[in-house]
Every structure is written in structure tokens, then in C-alpha cells.
Image 1 (cartoon, one colour):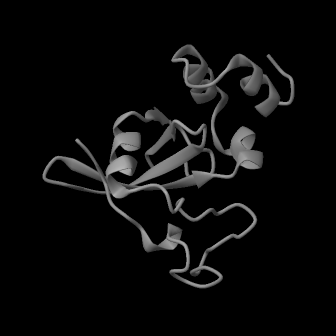
Image 2 (tube, helix red, strand yellow):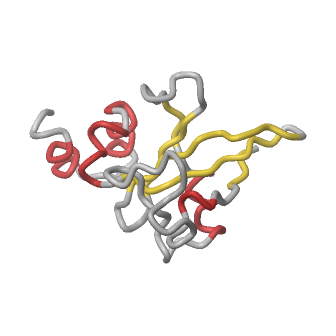
Length: 125
């Protein structure tokens, strides 16, 4: 079972310019319009994938109805439930932070258009 758990690191205004290990060039706060119940649904609909930046951590990827990309990490496991936190992936970083295999699956599922997929990957098919 996947359980969403809010993380203050990704909440706007929680830490001013950001907490330790906050990288403003690519870290994004959670959108103000994303409620915890919506984040839980994104987690439930997410795809499991590898993360080259954190190869020893479980990662999941999602897209919302507005076309935004999200990445989540498993923080802990308790009583058979995995606790996850996630954040929005800045559009310019999608080609680097979201595996191509995940993007292809979003295309197959109809969540991502082939045109946008090609644009994200710099015109590559």
C-alpha cells in the first residue's frame, strides 16, 4: 500500500529560501492547488521507476490533469504501508529527472501527447 506523507521541504514558504539541501535551480515547492488527497491519488496512479540520482531509493513518477510532472520517494515502510513524499518536477528538468521509459508509458496511457513527448526529449522519437 502506498501512503502519501507531506514533507515540509516542498511546501511554499516553509523555509523562506529553502531548507538545507534545497536547490532552487531545480527543487520545486508543491503547488498550492494540490491538496493532500490529490497527492495521494497521484501516488496511487504513479509509475515505478529508477532514479539515477538516488539509485538506492524507490522512486515513482506521476502526471496530473494539468500536465505537470511529479516525482516521489519512499521515506519509510510501516505495517506493510510505504510512506512517500513527492514534488513537482520543473518542466525544463523533465528530460533529465523523469526516465524516458516513464514518459513513453505516459504516452501509451494517453496522459502525454506524442508531440509534447518529442518536445521534452528535444525532438527525439
